Length: 150
Image 1 (tube, rainbow, N blue to C red):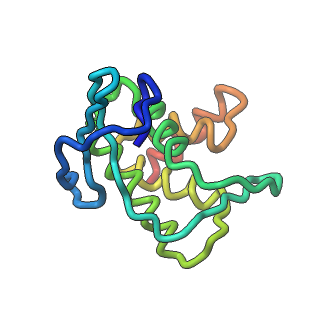
Image 2: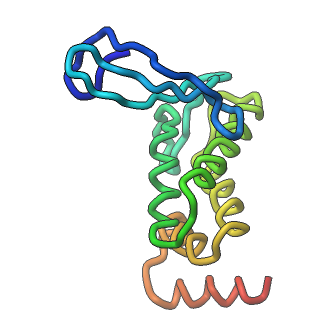
Image 3: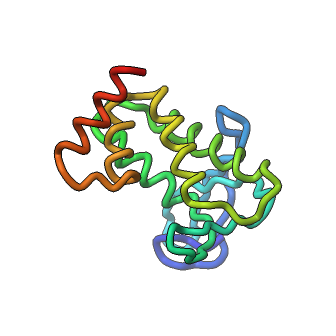
């Protein structure tokens, strides 16, 4: 594993343990070149996923992008980082278990919306505002009104 600080190719594993949800291995690593310590996570990847975007463009599934999007929606909401990681793990598992290698971006968006709706209403509305492309304040109002009726 390459050191993220100095680029040295030969780092050492100092400690390995499963994550709390047992879906990854957390490894503490040490770089003998610059003496830095860092953490890596090792996960099972069942298949390579390709995301088909709204306009037909294809790109590889990016777990980090999914995590970033959920973090942005949850910013300043007091939601634990582990909970966000559990949501991302669950969504990725659902996508991989479909048996399909090509996934519509809308399917990912719906899974995120479903997870956020049960987690935090404000995070849900924040994500929805981007996902559903709200243009005006009335779009927010209509969406929140629908939430009250559910």
